[in-house]
Image 1 (cartoon, rainbow, N blue to C red):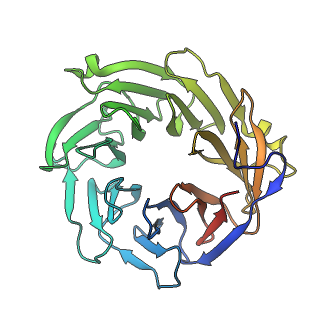
Image 2 (cartoon, helix red, strand yellow; image 1 turned 120 degrees about the vertical axis):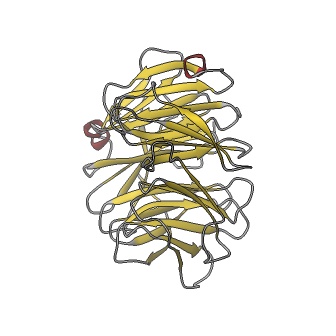
Length: 330
């Protein structure tokens, strides 16, 4: 298969970098539209919007009262941006306006708002699901109908610690998975009439799951002990795994932490970073990881987020130095 990333220790071209804040950039996402926009989660609980092709001043969306935990652009409307927070709310913003959110989701069935640690929406964006931190002795998956903002109830028996991520299946409208500090990734078909019926399989990762993503019909994740794992949902153990130390052996510099994994067309890549801001990309096309590219001179501190733009054909990175950098599509 032809890879757009060159084999070997290549350096990817830095297209631009911009210092946009004195705060940390915690997350960076890009819309899928001709007019490419970036949305950044800032450590002061603001959302910053940037135009990738102009020097227009950034704009900020303010509304969340506590840490923003997740952010995503709509697949269908490039101007609609979703965000979740530990303040217990999911907001939908119209990025063309600085006004208040156009829609809000929350769960106040226990009189207090449950702290939302992550969220996602399904393929046709009719339904939204959020995961919570531990509330007393339960961690919840909560569902809403986006068309009416109605709370549809939730699941509360599938995880027993903070839920770290929720991801709907990229091609199956009722498929979903969730991960947790409890070390489990649960796979669901929401056509099931109950939580028990909906649960298809459970992957025991062996360590807290920091984040995961679908890659075709498989699942990949990064763990609290700095390990990358790639799983088939029907197998009892991962068929590819690599620790941070093993990744360090593939590059000339030490990999101090794992950042994330992402798909480029049909190929899976894993990103790690150094405390000096260098990002290493590894190809996961075979049963072992191979160093494919280094992203240098874009950051001077820890890189918190990496995102591949399908429409723009570039990689965006954001870090603790308050810099957002754009990189060529290899």
